[in-house]
Amino acid sequence: MLYCAPMFTGIVEARGTVERLEADGAVCRVVIATPADFPVEALPLGASIAVDGVCLTVTGRAPGWFSADLGPETLALTTLGALAPQAQVHLERPLKLGDALGGHLVSGHVDGVGRVVARQEKGDALELHIEAPLTVAPTLVVKGSITVDGVSLTINAVEGKRFSVTLIPHTLAVTHLGARPPGAAVNLEADLIAKHIDRLVAARFSATATSTPTPTPADSDRFRPLASASASPSASSPEPRPDLAPRSTSAGLTLETLSRHGFIKHGPAR
Image (cartoon, rainbow, N blue to C red; front, side):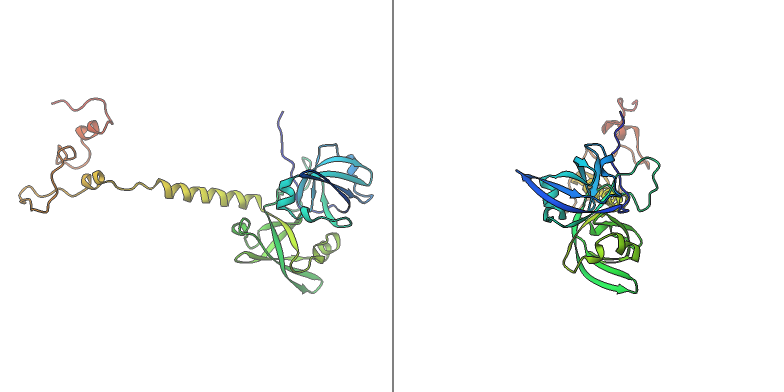
């Protein structure tokens, strides 16, 4: 059976409210209340759901609520570790085959936590300036996409690790990003394509750097220009290397040279 990882698109469907948190060793179970127009009960147990941009597994559900477990990595590497009762969270169900891709491809795997550093009103819109961690900064591209707390947004400007996004009135109405003050932590997921390109380019440069051959003394001797037959050797001239001296003065490779270096099985006929 072919398995397809759940995908989201960064279009928030609803806002839920944290009802309670139940610690169980290294795992924390969160119970989230959902609005009536968000049919969470239709999701099967074990289904995926995005909570503030983090892909979680539904462990329990009924009309009006669902539960999910937060593992140690989720608690440590996302903002969900700081959740408290009555906190609001963005909710999005996974895409089905044929659904419209309203935002961009989102996996729900958070790449790092950013910080809101400034807010600036732009008429009815709001511009947020966010500082990204080093793990996300290389993927920031002007007019590219980024997911902030599960919301698909377009990057307006990039300066070092900082970038800005604009929240239009609709985004302000259906999400809680407009209430994020300077200093607030936000989950960031870089664009999938940008992440893969960054990884491939870095791997390519690394492979090129490590595979550059370093000339050996034998290489230096092999490619040293031949001395003129009439020139007398000086006291500073290196000792001759019979094993490396070419047996033919004609240009290019000879059969003997190829044979001596193992490229052919038999040497030339004599």
